[in-house]
Image (cartoon, rainbow, N blue to C red):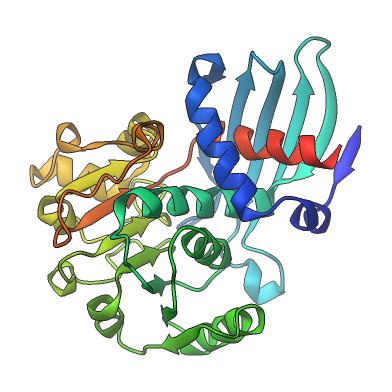
Length: 315
């Protein structure tokens, strides 16, 4: 069995390839068989174990991702999210590779936001606002700049010091960008063309009343019913609400579950799934003034797409 480290995957499998591989998998979903993600809480808040199996009968490859989420890890100088993906040859049942899944998880989630931004944001969007600068944030940044001509990045984090460190990281890699840190999240929301949220918050991280016309929002941090980083009033304000996986958000998106329960926005009002936008290959935006929202909770076939894509590159 071949073992591929995170560093090796990073060197050989970039964001643009991940976006391409996920859009390609949308074209042959009939060949994909998957099961709903199993999430087992292991402590307070977001602490949990996640198991995500999937098979591609056309390529005769299967994957299972095993992920641990341990929010207190940073204080011990360990990553919050750790993952491994096992690749299996279906014809023989042989487990041929283990790929470090932490980077691939971040990469595929960033790629999903990138795909949503490509089809849902204004073509002239150039100011990216990022709420949360933790472990998932950098690949969210990469996903957005891969599809839009971003010239300004505005950051907010509850701990300003972390936002400043993230700013330094961006400027090291992209010195021509303008990068700002805001201490008031409302100031970020009012100036961003694209808002990307990547937090495990159990309460909304910004006020729906502050959203400006024409804004596109990616919400990727909440993946359990108790997590609610988006103000669910946003959904009824939006001209389009698109999700990565409809069945997944019904079980896991705290914001949409709450909105459906109180009748402010029902699951039946969701505009579409991301795969439809990709297959149509054209802008999903109705007007330049409309608010659009993409809600992502993750699904195993996204992990399969990038794991097999990386595996084919690496082997």
